[in-house]
Structure formats: C-alpha cells, structure tokens
Image (cartoon, rainbow, N blue to C red; front, side, top):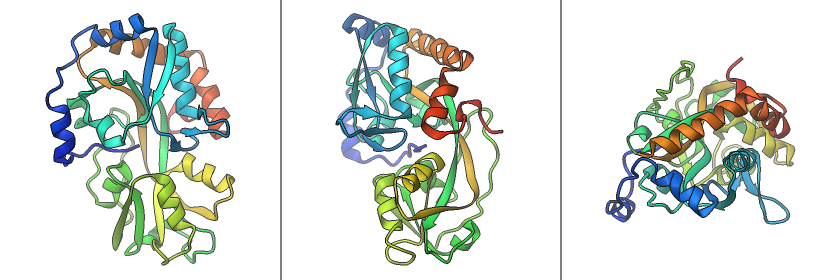
Length: 277
C-alpha cells in the first residue's frame, strides 16, 4: 500500500550502499539453516499488523506470515523497521521477507522481488463523522492526510503509477489544496477525528484499515467510491531466485486451498484475496 520513491534520505542510502547483493539460494539457505523466518512488517497498522492486548503481533499480514513460515517448516520472528528502509532493499540479512501489504511496482522491482500477490485492496477517502463532506469530490481543494511515501500520497500528488499486471485503471478524481503527510495511518486518523478543518478535512488510506478504525470507535466515515485498487505482495531482497520460487509456490497454494480467502474473511469480512469483483 505504500510506494517507494526515489527520494530516499541520503543517510539511508549511505547505510545500505555497502551491502552486497543476495545471490541465488543465499537467503533461502539462511532461513532454513537458522530455522527461523524473520519478517519485516508494521506494528501499528490494524487490521493488517499490530500489537494486540497481549503485546503480540497480530493481524491479517501476521497470519499470512505465520502460515508461510509453517509451510516452510521454520519458526518466525517479527521486526518493525521503517517503511522507507524496507522498500529501499539491500537488507543484508537483517530480515528475510516483508509481509506488509506492499504494492509491486517497477521502481520497487529494481531492488526487490515480489514472489506472490496475496490480496487486492481498495484505497478510499474518509472524513470525520460530523463533517459536511458527503462525497470524495467535495474534498477537492481541501487539506487531505496521507502516509508519507505511500501510494496514497502519490495519488494525491497525481504521480501514482501501479504497473503490476491486472491493476484496474483509475482517475485522479480528487485534487487536494494541501497534502498533510504523516508517518502512518494512525496519525492521519487521529487528525481526522478532530473534525473538518481543525488539522485536516479528510484522509486517504486502505479501506480495510478505515473500516477497522470505525469499528474500533473512531468517529470517521468513508466517503465515495474507492480511489483506486492495488495488488499487494510479499517482498524479498532481489537476487535469490530459489527463495523467490519457493515463496511463489507457497502463496499460490494458499490461494488454491482457500487459506488466504479464510484469512481475509476472518479479518475483513470480505474476500480480498480474489481480487476486484
């Protein structure tokens, strides 16, 4: 759901520039030899991934990651680096895979591989419950929040390209007067709930996350039809064709046997694994 831009801070680029590329089999061998799959994801992005009341990682992406590890016959460990570092690639073995609802794009494909798309989700606009705005078109010229370095921010900038096969076409129906870029969805939601015009007039984000926030009691409502749809994939550091192939087979099997469908229904009440209906 977040989009890697080429304007990564110089410090980040410097920190990864010395890392060697992954050669075929290296990452897979590391996982199998250690007996642990180290997964990069987000700890503050319900219902995809979050810390539950027992301070354990939980959510749709977490369940997907656990099932991948189970089918590989290894244990699992979660880490939560920043999104820009994950999408920059050249992980140098700090983690093995990203299961974080990442959109596969040509730009990201320069440093990452995408073994398998596991679901397809809509991006939508939301406003505070008492806002006079009733349709997304009324957000034209308004202040809209989006996660920094995300597909949502790029959509508001009218600079979004999702070049994965099967992605439905979309139009830029909304042109904000100002974009409020925040570190994560939760921060945007907190600004939206304050009311129209206090900090922002609305936000754009993952529809499942918006629905979950509303169910959790936040005073928000979704307005209008989805802005766009995006395929979401697991990702690995570029270069290990054996690891890529193994994960691809696992994801395909999870689609075929209904596992991803069941997980989607569990967390969203909708089967997002099947794509756009």
